[in-house]
Image 1 (cartoon, rainbow, N blue to C red):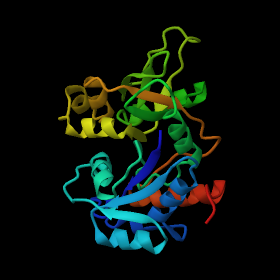
Image 2: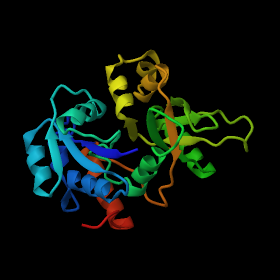
Image 3: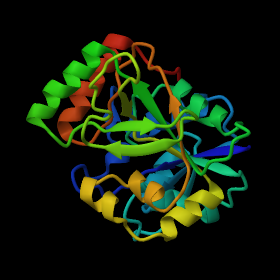
Image 4: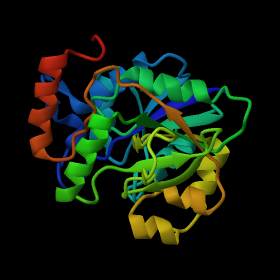
Length: 260
């Protein structure tokens, strides 16, 4: 199945105005994310979708394809859905690669793209990381301070999601049978699945847990979980001004994910 990557990049971020153009170690946030997407093998096309012409101009300055979408999109998922028509995307599937996911290794996107070759049909694909005992304990400790941080996911024997939660699931009463997996908030959709999803109203469990992926499960969409490995790289995104220093320090410590 052919796959496009769409990068939703909103200029009017409430916490960081003009976030896509903010410099991260001398290169804008948007260009860094675009470079990661371009480095991912198997993507037929990479498109930046934004509500602001300034972002379009900036994207084109470093050779990216960019399209304007409306300023009425409430989230990146809706912006990606609009971009399918705005950019005349013909691929059968799209990956929503958020414009602030600056430390996502390209092989995570490649694993998602590869899953679309599965003969078993699904509507949505999303990655998760199997937690070691040490990582699980770190998550438990962190949740004592920030209960709504970190999402876990359970899935069936074919890796189709059963549930996502801000609670740590499954509850490990007897160890050695099922691992705990931390969900990574990236999504790929068949075009048909995405169009169906954005047409649905918010669902009860989605609103209860504050997790948009539960809307898909509550309405019977099949969500495939792909298990990924960050290979020692740190996962982070830019949501606040403080995150910029954290990301720059991570790049200085671990090196660049992709070349120029």
